[in-house]
Structure formats: C-alpha cells, structure tokens
Length: 56
Image (cartoon, rainbow, N blue to C red):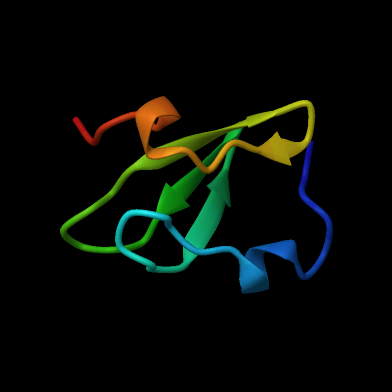
C-alpha cells in the first residue's frame, strides 16, 4: 500500500536522519553508512530502530 503523498518528504531515518525511500512494504534509509529498512504495517510506518531490518 503506497504511503500518502508528501509523507516521505517529512520522514527521516531515526538512527541517522537521512531521507527514506519506499520499497515494497518497507521504507529504506538512503544513508550510506546506515541502510536500515523499516516495516510498513497496515499503511503505517514503524520507525523504531529495534524493529528495523539490518542491511545484508
């Protein structure tokens, strides 16, 4: 489910404050040293570092 228009413009990675980009059911951090992937559940981004998937 796509996020509301403009929402990605104001969201940032809680760990490094880099912008996020939408990919499937996740929001990916665009920071080069971070790269965390945050889940989106029922259209709501879960921006908790403990819930994020670490980069492979």
